[in-house]
Image 1: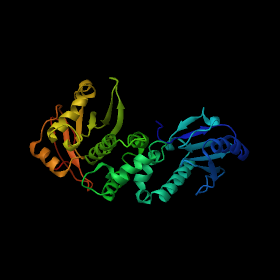
Image 2 (image 1 turned 180 degrees about the vertical axis):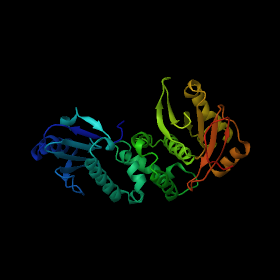
Image 3 (image 1 turned 60 degrees about the horizontal axis):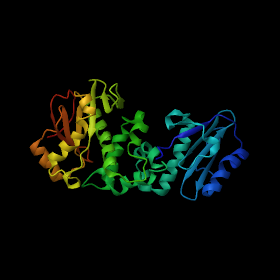
Image 4 (image 1 turned 60 degrees about the vertical axis):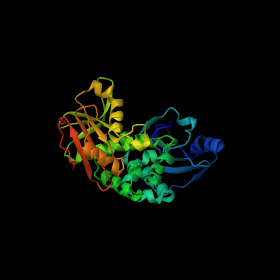
Amino acid sequence: MAGPIRFRYATDSWTQQRVDSELFGPLNGNLGARRVDPHNDPPPEYQACLFEMDNGDIALFCWHDDSGAYWLGNTETPRTLWRTEKYTFEEIPYPVARWAQRELLARLEASDPWLAAYDHVAWFFLPVFFSKDGRETTRAFFRDHEGGFPDATREDALEFYEALLSTGILDDHRYTMATKLGTSERLDLVRMRASMAELHAAKLLADGGHEFVPEVELDSGYALDFRVLDTDRLVEVTRPEPPTRRRAGTPAAALRETVDGKTSNQLAAHPNAVVFVDCSSFHDDEWQAIAAERPGVGHNPAVVYRMRPDGSVAGYSHGDHGLSLQLSP
């Protein structure tokens, strides 16, 4: 499975003739390719071209006499670039990254204007919206499955995530968090909804005034979802599927079954970690049953909550989690 799109950086010298012979020629021979002009001017002193393949793949290439060349694509990599190092948008010169992102956003506007209309969503998830394997599934997740929210419209979900991402709280962790949505050809809704739960957790922490870092590698060998810097608390996030989608017969059983999968590994190794149980996949009646019973989940401390596209968060907690969280009953 291919990962999110990243740049390949070639340090050697390039000319138009070399681009034709070592890039366009192999691509055209293997996939059928067209060389087209970019929508936007490349950075000053760079030359650039765009390749469109018959199977829908694309690739961008720009080069500079003194600064090497950058390749970005969701297609096969020509042999001449195989040994080059890969870099994220944030790791290369800003003018090159800005140009490439403008190119991809222009293509997203042409193919999926309903998605490109949400600037921060489009920018943040760009590495997976154009990934080789996940470009169809990640777009379908927002188009056909409302970003994982039940009883909501596509627009409701996109407006919620646009507002969340516009705060910039996850900008420094873009590749880490966006990649969780997936770069797979298979539409795995359970995993994708669970990935969005980590964005919900980030919002809950930020709204409480906490600073955090995601995906914390620990000496135990496990990685937990967040470290809250101001309290030095570890947070692990889980998002249960509601009972209508799983064998668990009641909403409370669905919570316990999901947390059980964590208690024998991450939470056993870090018993003081807070488990966030995100019930945002639950319908109204399912959540009302949880809110009335306020069941334990098999681990303390725990925070159980449901986030809605209007930004409201209802929930409760068990044990002393030491966090300032804005939860309504």
